[in-house]
Image (tube, rainbow, N blue to C red; front, side, top):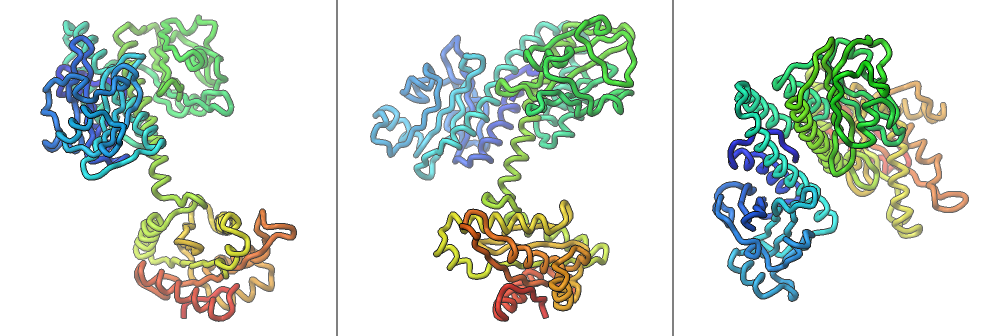
Length: 523
């Protein structure tokens, strides 16, 4: 995590790394996380952060350790590759086993922190309650988070050198205060738009500028597209795109090298967004880079003859590096949130996400006096189908039903979830049950047109679509399945989440009992 905090002591560095340690701990759930800084000059390891932080680190803060004390395996320090040590491993060296026994460790994943081929520290994931074999995915995730820690250590050192160089400047104290305060906010921000806003605020607190924009890479199209802008011409700038390699911004994205151009008006590479004025302009352009991948380019401008100096260039570079990591963190958080709330097979919401969304919809319904319908959907005779065609075809049935449900409901309005096994749930906000039996009969007669939107109407459209469509990959002609659907509505049939689910489930079993491949409303 590349930091632009004004670091005047190791305590501030520990604050930066504490964020990384906590993220590792919350993501991979080891017993303890430690981050050690490596001092190459003294060949010493210095504890900088631990999670949990409450006094259970095996090494008191600030006490140096010989690298060999951490592990006898030279590949950790010299080879710079992840090393997993398990006390149950018969191949573990006697020295390492004695050390792990003394420290009460069952397993330890050692991740070297390397920046630009220089070892800057170690990230340790310690297990004290039981043996643990980390998967390749977990090791990859730990390495990715370790890279953030490596960048944090490197840039903390770099910023310390910059601080010494600018110590004589009277306003350095203000810079330090603002950089620390705002970068702390930025490091804990997990929303992309807020990351952009915090970058703009941080730079504005450090020096004045007239305009700022952030263009993100569309790798598929090979273009940069302006996604955020702070200036009087923002309406013209937002959405403006240039091909990779075109203009100064495109060149910066292509090379990955920052530039300071104090006479943009006469730079032959310059391109302007339509509707913007041609006037003297000075610009600093810095790529947002994480793990050697260019995410975009940040541009800061001054107009009408005002130029930038080396101080501003360095600060923009530092802030942009920090912003790139914060942006990547936001993306990773979004991905983790998606995995935590999404069924892996179908891509629909899972049971936990359904409960949360249903509570939200019921709260809105109570507030505004509107109905909510809930459909409980179950595939008929799914076990015999699996037995006949195999579980791979059974999975295709589940994916196919998920697609039918998504097509049959309102995007960004209705909630579709896999409830468990072959059961699915659809939540229909602002939708009454709709006299389900009569509506279902009308819909069957009209081949399920979209003219009516009630709980029963949507249920019947789903039932009809599933019965009509064959299951891909099950032969020619393809096999077919049917579904039974139970419908219940708030407040007509239930006044709570639990009763609504229970009553829809009762209606589902009524549909099963009456012959399957039908829709029934709770009664």
